Image (cartoon, rainbow over all chains, first blue to last red; front, top):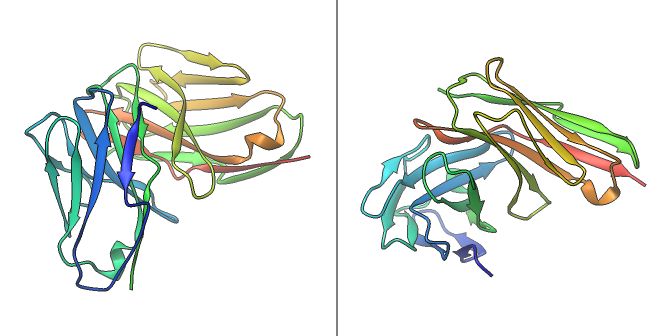
Length: 114
Length: 111
């Protein structure tokens, strides 16, 4: 099925460990996004890539890095995980800014940092 | 900075009732507004998208309206069913903030 695929689905990290969340889309979308969802805070944009070769900071970029590997793949890296980064992470993609088809979301990665 | 507010935060209704969920946003310079559904522990499913030039969109028992000048949208659910129980999220797209979300309305439809 066409869509956005995220791996892993669940992860537990110790404080200070690093990890990379993977995201891939097969809809030939130009733009990709990383959000985090926390209780009482809603979904907040971490980083986005408007097109292959570009990345920009969102609302809450501190502690994260991203790589747009190619048009299909957009990864999110935590270099030194902190308990405050415990959250559910969602990757999304869209055809372009203002697309009439909107955003498509992956099923999420549930990350716990202990 | 775009801010999106959804009211009410939670809603519990008996099966069969028609209901309205509200969404407001502070910056009217939007490209579109999208309504999503999220089931517990799951991802987001897109329900409806209204472009900034449109007034409403319909899909089955769902109807979403948009009043861009006043910064408001409503999601109308007709003849609610227990399977409609979920959290409903409103989000607006702008060039600066990209897709900005409200905190959602948690809907429970009781049999």
